[in-house]
Length: 433
Image 1: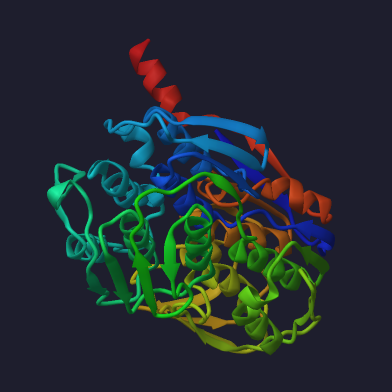
Image 2 (image 1 turned 180 degrees about the vertical axis):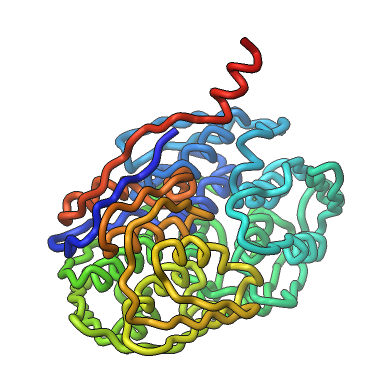
């Protein structure tokens, strides 16, 4: 087993290159099942979720060839409907995109219930509602999702999502691209990775219109052809390094970004007194010696992202005064607060609201990553804390951040990966012996 060890107190300085968007890649890779040809995907992030999805496609018969570490060719011309690997499917949230992709390609699907980070109830009821509206019969039993397209092929229909759901919006889009007729998704999510998925599908011959608005229209086509597509930069990875620079009072140029996607993050950072300058495809962040307290609420795009909430909480621990964070998306996304308290943070949580008393120095401590973004928050806390921080369960972090340790070391951080004993495995071995 491995953990991060961080000796804090070093301002981050230099340049960092942002990788491809995790939330786009984990939808685009399953969507490659709908393509009758060779897809070349560029700017793929080198993260464990991507590796698992590519393995699942191989299991279905796809030919997957890595061209270089950030580019892959996927040939799904010889795929067939098979049971997907249970152990992989249950580990990643994005496995639910295979439901829409399999329905589009085969007219049938069988997948496990999605896994991933556990930070609250994230049902797939909107996925089921949307896929049912465009011609699928779905049944969830014994931890699996079974789906059949009525008549063997999906059909166009009108879907109104009861709440804005990124996953459901993308899943319905994927299922609808090869359907008979026109699909209309109302109250659709508008995140940048939804636009990226639509652009990928359109580059392969689909007819998707309105992505980025709350009404998306998909005109079904007979087939999709191969092509080359470059995935957008990761908004959340960029935001994480922006906050890390601010928290350590550093100065970091964050390259390969789309500044418009970062506006909601930049605006809140500026409120704290952090300097954020945009230039073409980069942003320069300079931390302030004294930070202001603020209030924020997470909302669907273009609001402040829920995936940036834990990282911002760390920054506000360092600000003067009392800050308030309201979580507007998930019910239980403050599990990481207990870990921050180990480091000296003064945070009280009441339901979806966290009240942060700033101005308390953080000190190093043994902590754990509760989920992907909470893990990133622990890293930021370790970077600005006094002393040594050890972070366990780093597999969560590696689900969504490419080479975080290497990138931070290049910015001057004292961080390394160390191995430590797996006590449970050791105990089991002793019992067997």
